[in-house]
Length: 552
Image (cartoon, rainbow, N blue to C red; front, side, top):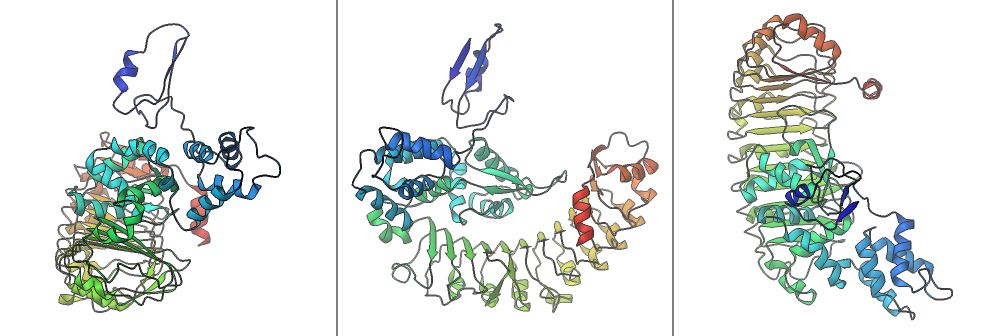
């Protein structure tokens, strides 16, 4: 006996559970847009490939189920199928809307709207209503989080930490990312996003959002953008400046008509520019913006002066999407920000003028990812000139050229997280590191040229986690590491140069987890054979990764 439960909604696990009977040959098949973790026999249907998509489309568009001879050109069918992005519902709805249209006027008009950027959802209410029911089932904050995914470019992975930075400030979620991670998880359960792991093995205390980048199907992104807009299509231009979440795409140097005509009331503003943009900005009055996202392409980019007037700005995310890091100019405007909390730069090239942000007294978090930094952070950052007095979280990831951490950073005494990962040229940490008395997390994953930790690390009595995994040139740990009375997690996998652990490490009573490979586990057992309560996370050797590092 086969019982089929079709289109089951979330929170229906109890129904399925009550229909489970101990009958020979009895099975239950459940179809749903959502995942049910309680039931582990799950098969996720992927979107249709080009061949199957075209077959389904033709079944709806043509009575015979195939393209009739001497009628609709094959290229028109292929382009229409491609616009449906492999979604069966879209293929069926769009195909049915074109059924019987033999004069090609409707076909070409539909494709014309698509070429002008009109969403497939705008002309097919049935498709929109069906997809929107999945969004309506979300709680209010999770729904807003879904809409925020439309702020980023199509077909690019969205860093989980960029979303965390936004959501903490907009929706008052926790800094640790627990609630933000829950929202990501809920969107994943409903198959509205996919999560791509960044690291093969994450640390025990690593933020959930830090572990993943987010991808989304193009039509779902279109849905997020569509739902963020207010009013019908004919009013869209007039109402653009009145939206809470405003998404602007600038092609060449052509600004929207409303740009200089009325104040923008949006809390969230996303501006995307292409490689033809000259960085000559028309003025914009947007005093209520709390989150500004700049998606940029091209070799050079000038930050707009109107940032100075964004008196409510809390989060700034600047991301370059070109082949090489975009040279960022006019960084001086950042010194005028009134109450910024989080600034994130990704894939941009920075000059020493970045030091203007060092005077921002409200800045809590500063992030650089895949940036060309050089000595931009080092010059002028010693002593009292480094004024990030409230900085709590500092991160540098995949920045290939920094050779040292500026000693001036160590005067940011409120710092709790210091994450410097995948920085292949970093070969030293300042002795002043021990001044960061409030530091709780120190992440140095895959800094392959780093030779040692400074002796002053023993002063970090609040430190709960150290990650030096894949730091292959570290040959020894400082003996003072035994003074880290709050240390709970230590990651030392892939530290090929580490041939001995200090005995003082075994004296730490709060150690809960050790992330290591087989060789480092042997070293640990030599000094801490009685620490049986410590959770061991054994990492298998990545021979390909090791070979890649050697080649680099």
